Length: 286
Image 1 (cartoon, rainbow, N blue to C red):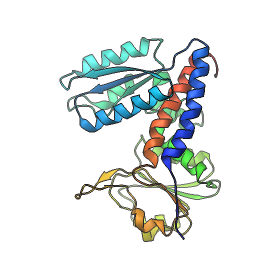
Image 2 (image 1 turned 90 degrees about the vertical axis):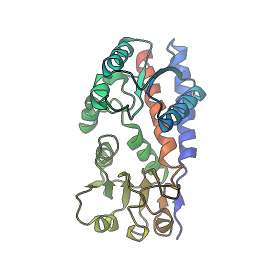
Image 3 (image 1 turned 180 degrees about the vertical axis):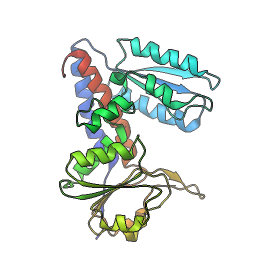
Image 4 (image 1 turned 30 degrees about the vertical axis):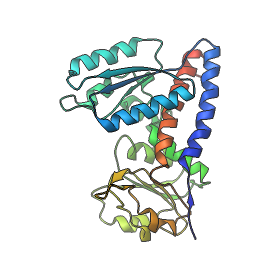
């Protein structure tokens, strides 16, 4: 058996076509979907991520307001900019690109973003709404993972799902989404005593821990679906996930590649959230 490779680029392209249609519907009501992007400092990877997000936004008709700030920016001035964007009725979403430079703690900045414009889904208000099953915005990477599972034809109700990682950006919201889909969810982390045993029992594996090829291919239960969120650079310069892709390929029913799996979905789901915010401003949805 060789696993089906889940093409995140193709699934993301389908979602973005839908986003473009919704953006145009909002525009017909006088609302131009707008994303404000804040990039502080000159981190090369962050600059690439922002450029990719802005390019995709332009392709679907979402306007972007680019705020490039020097690394010397103070926390106070960054907070002032966030407050200004919070108050700007023409802005639907605010994206603060992480990581921030040393000396600017990220948590207070993210807390300063209006939850109604938190299209990343990071604000505690949005995380809490997800917890009670009434989300405003769902964190983009977990939302993308759920769409990939649907694309794979996964039956989640009653399935044993393992989430490796417990960050508030991926691991915890991912577990909540799976739980709300009626999966039986196990959340593993750095203190899990026997990770191999947990993987071997799982029908669904979502790896989001940030350790190159931590999950060995021979651990994968035959027929399991594997979603690899990890993006790691090896000593040789290869880009790999948290799962041993080559080893898992012969055991899994379906698996995401790295790159080209979850990454494109994260951007698409960010823009999906921006479109949703614009629809709310236009009165198209509650």
